Image (cartoon, rainbow over all chains, first blue to last red; front, side, top):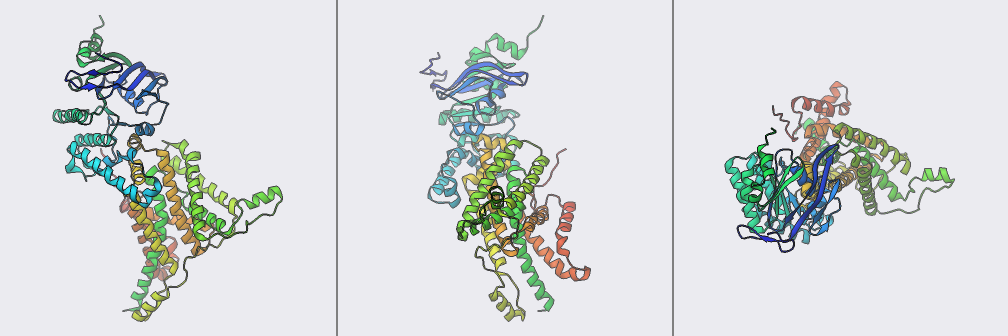
Length: 272
Length: 328
């Protein structure tokens, strides 16, 4: 089913492209603790790729490696065919990799619109002088970026809170604003760290719908972390399963569901 | 109109204008504190240093001339040119940006994630270093600064008020110019932080470092930028105070006057710095006018600090600062 260059066709008939992100033999240690142990997997253009596993499996660490917050001791990261030198998180963001955080990292003092506009920072070209003087190019750019942000805001159905300071929003909406900010940068790869964590059933359904819509409408490549198995299996095209920093499964949701090692990790094994 | 009330009006106006200058210094503190959580004790010395540099550049002084002469036995003091004020200010600004970059690279890059008290101690060190460095570079004597700002009594106000009240107000032209420039500066700063890419990135860093990184903002670039802007504000304050009372060590002490302004206005609020400055300026002048003669005068030395103490007791976050809420 997997063809290195041609990609593949999903169960629901979507064409998935070539490799966007290729993680090769990644090992990450914190002092004596090995958080990630020799893991390789890839993310393909247009797919929804999930990383799942029990608590402490190293999922978030893996996401932090992709987004540059952690630098692995061993292994290589290939982004769009290029080997990536160790870089800082803001440089990774400028390459077109946007992310959200497990514990929400929004600019609490700013309005929703301002938060989403910060997502455009990587796309704005006007230099510091023309910005300071507010002339021609900078003004035109501001208007164009504003339009894109309004589109994202409409798409995620948060028009009614555009001007509200983020600090006043309930948890579920904050998660959606964070998604909007990441989306506004028109990312080549979107990383979602537990997008459904702490949500009630209704909010989870909303979020799942938005993730599917984003992928469908903009063709955005998405990698997400989740430990709620049910949600992930419905949402994703391919799943990586981690446990204690190792990869114990990789494949379509059905393949993973029937993998004995995965079942053991989630349900526990009897030791008799 | 009763004579006392007319005097009080004059005192009020002079207080407002003194307040503008306090606000200008406080603004430099707020900018850096908001963006990096650093309370920059060196802000006053930055004003002194920038004013010294401006005089030195305009007069064509050879930097470190005493050091050079002592080591090489030469007698160089001046390049022998006099630069126009505009060019001098531009060159001084280049120096201040360079300084901002050095401060970031040499000091604060190595202190990321340290306790606020450690960052504060570092700025105390920076203040003493810059003070000595400035003296070494340009000499420690009192210098006259003249960038062509008008000085002396404003005759129009004097005449107009004389026609109305039979008493001419003494308002210094320099104070009027300082007020206008400070107002413009604040307007530009607000527009910059609200409507430009770099301004937005600056607010982003002030709000949440991690989130700022995730949208592609380089923290160190923003910090250099903020220190440069604070350097520019220091330069403006340095020009105003330097023109008024000469460029000398006491100029760095205006930072101490900014402290009560910050306690009143809140450490994180730009409008707070301005309103706080005006309240302190007007308050100390009116207090001196009304009660000074009764309690022996010289109240301007302490009034601002007592007012700040009162605020600390009843409204510790200041007029506009972020409210302190503790969740239990």
